[in-house]
Length: 169
Image (cartoon, rainbow, N blue to C red):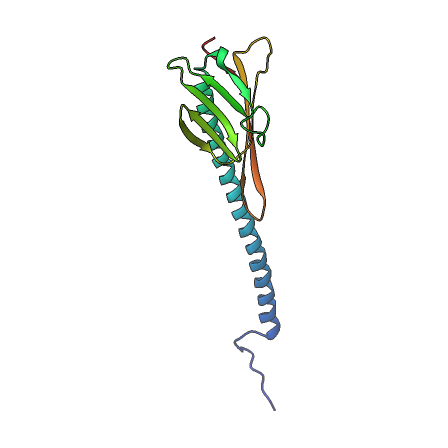
């Protein structure tokens, strides 16, 4: 007669396969959650970087534009390959220095006299306009910045400053 052991230690094959299956599901979903969390982090960081860049660029443009001589402001395009109204030229009131802001490819460029400085290299769209035809001391500035994030996707940020008041009429 064969006696069965009642207190046998160990796991059955069914129990082991069940644990392996559950661990597989948990690891598979955990990996997807980690990928989604990383994408969210990259997207949030890119959004904050673009906002910081756009604010800094807008600050420089508005600070200089406020010191312009109204009668010297010219809005045109830098070259035939650039968008219309993507360049503004003017003389500063204090020292009569010629100042220009314009788009070259994805760069926003500030030209002050003979010095050329790139403000941002994520520019997609830049436009200057006079929002009111009866008041040429108000200038509208619009820009769109864009950066590649992951898997061929991009994040874009549009920033517009509708009213930059020229202080020197």
